[in-house]
Image 1: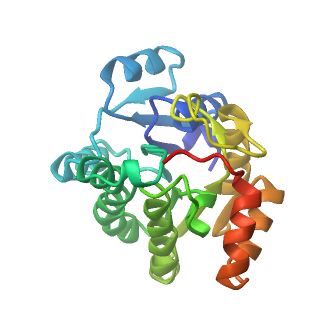
Image 2: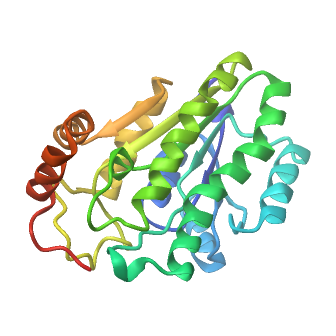
Image 3: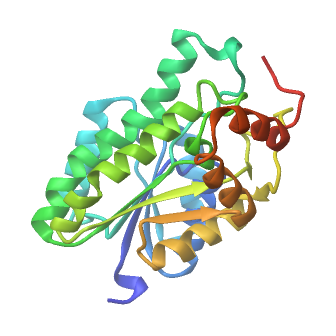
Length: 254
């Protein structure tokens, strides 16, 4: 099967990494189904390439997610690769601990992925092929002071993928988790927190595409930050919190 025969469904396609992924997969000859909440941004993205088709979707609406998957199946467009990029990025500590912020973050970042997998997995299993990739974050490795309402959603995604991996393997399907570091997007452009090794959305999208082509379980970058945060999970908590301070700097939003 050539790239021209393949279909990718990118959820969260209207900005940042998702938008860049749409462009690079379309340029590589894939048929791209781009989903997101903002109809005007989807229309603009659709205009950039004949290979991109818009499918508006609100991942916080379980009925919309179910109908979107049913439509893809009915149109013979069941994806070879599904990339879940939808997410919100609330920055802060105690100031973000409200129902509105935390529930919205979990609903979009985590439960949207759950709804997608719940509806898509049975159809991919029946077909016997397919790859699902979930974008989490290096912040899911451990608690960081400025990610009180964001980090838990990403930790949940990593745990979800680890839990479901054996089921995907048994069904001859591929499940991948992507854990990027800091990426320049609309969500991070006004952030005042330290963002070491930050890269562009285009660079992140290229690394993700390369990693997914290998069909391994995890794609993570940048390497220095990923290694540092992974190693920090194995130190005592008194050392962990000292290292967190060195990694993130002293000035943090409340």
